Length: 167
Image (spheres, helix red, strand yellow):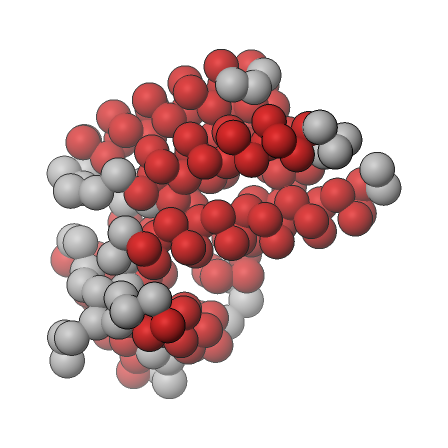
């Protein structure tokens, strides 16, 4: 498989994996910690969406599905499938408990990407493609434009009935 095509496909798959899991687990609904509240409200002040800002703040402040997906891909790259993904899921689970995070989005992200990588390997996609793809996926949410990406995340939250009630 062409590496550029593989990285682009892995980025799209990884992006969908972590955004759907994090939205489904309620990241846009409310800030899990004080830092996520500050980030979300700051993004809203700069023209972004509050729910999308809470989503972004939550993934900065605790190991949610974005971190789980990245660490799962790295674990699979370093140790193989499924062992590396399972070790990554365990480490993310421990990280969630250390952060007093009430959810399991990070653990679910690591486990789901392990399954995805195992299935994608049948089509010739290596775990390394998913490591690069996940870095690109996180960059589209956190590194390009906070206000624009927060509006996209807010629209996704509305469609999944996970939009915030907070003002």
